[in-house]
Length: 290
Length: 311
Image (cartoon, rainbow over all chains, first blue to last red; front, side, top):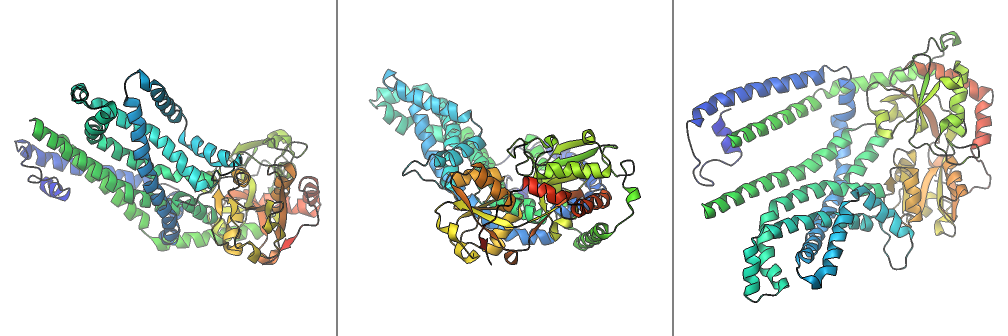
């Protein structure tokens, strides 16, 4: 394998984003590649040898990597995982909207907005300070047990609510970082043009802010995509719980591997996309700036 | 430089992943053979009866010589581990509750004094993972099933129970007489129990049951109005309805044996542990001399007049 082929493989080759600086590094690169390849082979070899010669490896293989169990567990876990995906999509939309609202409230200036700002800060501090699993349990089992008239009781509803609240608090801080990264002169120029505070936020600050924080938001996507599984503590049969049910009845963990593979199938592409987007954005910014 | 390093790091990761996958999927046939062998060994171990002489504290295969290390749930629930009045105390050394009492009877039979008994706590997953255990046996209402038997070893049964349905008083399901009456019910059960399999395979309700970490969470969901009924073993059903854990709950019925094979509870051992033979002798003797029946009478409420729900 040469360096050239790996460049092509990951679609980052010269040409796509303009010519790359080529230097004497190229020669050094071939030798470096050889060393990297050799050390990789040795490293993997030792790791695999250590695992395969372990005394309990046959039992581990039987319990964790059993192909027939894999095939048997796949449809069950995949059905549960589909619920994870749906929860993720619904929650993510709500989070993006609610978090932006909270961040905008927090960004308002002037004494008149003081109570709103305090509310926003209190919300963020309290929610971020509570472990997400506690929030799910408290809302999921606690609120319905109050038996308030007209309040929904479904575990899925409360599990999602807990996730949305928790992630909104974190995401609001991401937005805030974005808003604060926009130069102060932008805000002042907008105000001097006669825009109100809200208009300034809406038309000047937030559009620039969002662009700055898209990588961070995508990072949150990856995180949420896995955390939706936590609602299983409320009895919801999503992917991880489905895998657990399989494990519990067969004493075989291969279903956990199935669940892991399913999560990876979604989260790795999102992570790659995030990297690609960040890279592209940086290049564009550099092109503009430089 | 930095991009190249990243790229090689990526190739490394992919390489490792591929190798692991290849290793993981290799040699399925061998796996099956191992499993089959395991089953055979287990059956032999359970049925064979060696002479009692081998089963003395000095000869037993113990993780800590001279000490019987017993694992139970974390926490351990009534009526299996209780205080003297049958309430929750999560302290098996109190020797109260059916399983705590049984553990000390087995220990005494094998020649251990009470202070030679040490308790460990385990979750469900760490119990069934392959490899050595740091306890001699695990005692927390494990149902004996053939699939589980391939991975671990079980003693002979120390208790036989049936599944029971707990609902709120006045619920339409309180009057159920056959499992067909329960098709529309939203049911819940705790993971790792045969109750889950019972609901899915025998009752087969229209919407699949909710599955919780612990019976405690099933109770919470019941109190939150998220499920209409919960399925547990009969002794636990008596405890839940009798203790007020779920206010206004009643046992709608127990499921007759025809609807599902009864649940045999066994002590759980690491696969191939020879200790199981001696413990089996102890359990058989405790059944024969009425000790286990005495513990059942003392700790497991057996009130009559329970409806029977048929298949």
